[in-house]
Length: 253
Image (tube, rainbow, N blue to C red; front, side, top):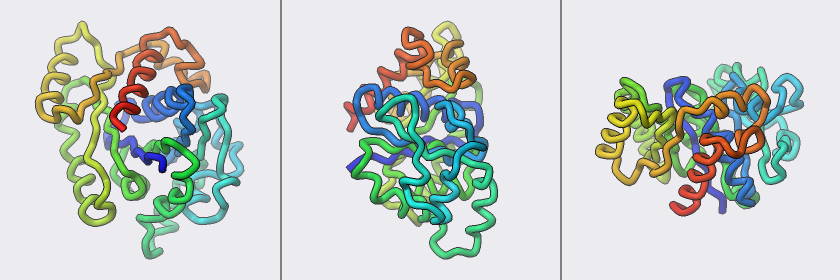
């Protein structure tokens, strides 16, 4: 059975989508069948793997609304072992449309249940909020990966997310594992990055990945070309860091 991992943080610009795309791509390159699900109406994970949200016939919205079976919402990417369920404009209205439906928090979990046999890893790229779509993703996931940028106030912003994760554990998904934390935007020349890393490892210990993701220009450029960093510049520090992270994730099981 495959692992379902929600990549979440209520703050924007911390590396959620970058991590979702490039970790999935790195695992696919390691010959693991991966599914990337873009739960963010902004659709950045969709465009980041070279797909146009406006051109997709169906996506996450149709999965949540039970309008289409899995095979009709699936999109192939440039990596043979990486598939996408993309975000379309309709996803913006999903919360309103499902507001009165009983069990709306479990729509994504039910849709993904049969897919766990087809994929080794399923990644849910969440929006930068703790709203309906993120709750659906947390209800569907077995584990949460939290990108934590190495910047001022980064650790303080974790408390609200951890409170939400505990609430989901207690009320919706008792099997959800508390967050694994990935340090992103790390600059070894910057004292602040080193301080955030030290505090995170002191507070969360083994829950913090050994791998850190550096600030890297090539990593920032890749989405504008609709490519994971592996296909844009595999020699870059960003690509090598995500390959290392993929190995660490596999070792953690």
